Image 1: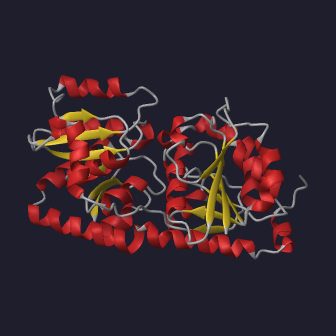
Image 2 (image 1 turned 90 degrees about the horizontal axis):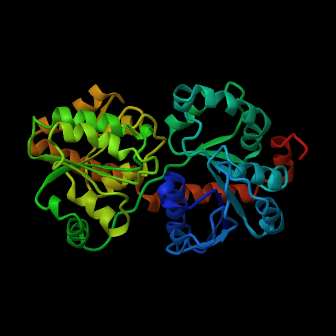
Image 3 (image 1 turned 90 degrees about the vertical axis):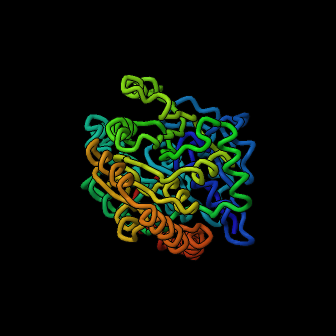
Length: 396
């Protein structure tokens, strides 16, 4: 099977969708071929490290991602592919796929959390503008899709709350991570060798974009409050700072005299990223919205407990399995996550770590979960044109 992934950018700093494409390629079904068409500049350095075929049609200058080359390319090359997967919403990629394939070839859309009602509450004016695009384009993109893919049942449930006009055929496919192979000691050394100040230090790890949606301000404020409870515990904040928020976040840390205990590493990849997971005590993510959280699965792959807000959609099942703690996405809720962790005995932490490893193996190992995506793609190849015509009732 030849599968085409359509995505605006494969820049790892953009977050989950780019990571998902790379992960799905890594665990593709035996004999299948994955390719991606993207609106990135072909000379972008981050494309060179990817081990699958990439058709880069950029550079693209607008945030919407309009690109005059995409639709003609899809119409010319679409028949070469057995499966089509669009990643994300609200961009030209979805519109182009709908125009190219709606009613003639099955395609799927990975929502990647972009239908969460959080965005309606957090950005009400922007949501009003989205209503116009929804009625003219996005509703029809999703209605015409063979399946709209969600990463957990909670994301699927919440998606229907964003727009009261909605109609799609949904399917839940869990994402996840892989168990890192090779020497754990070498991975730890890769991380600690770059950040020697953390050698011998105990720390909680946040790994993700430094963004308000991720609750970074809650994390910093809560850690400042909890720091006196355990003077030996540090905090590592690892991730890209595209919005240049770090300096503002660091002010209360400096004012509290905790500059030596809060460490900003920038984005971590490869061995250094896995080394950070392995070296930390626990992973923490106080996000206001997270449809899945690849980094959550990666932490559990390393046997690390996860401390999550209740807005991470998989947090309830993780807490129920004893693999982590869950609290409200507030400063107080984040403070209690940290203080509860500090109060736990070594034996309790060890039990939680074992539970995290078990839960990862049961639910979040991509060696298993990638098969679900392959199965849906296989089903799509047997869809008849009559089936498709009932989905796409608008003439392009």
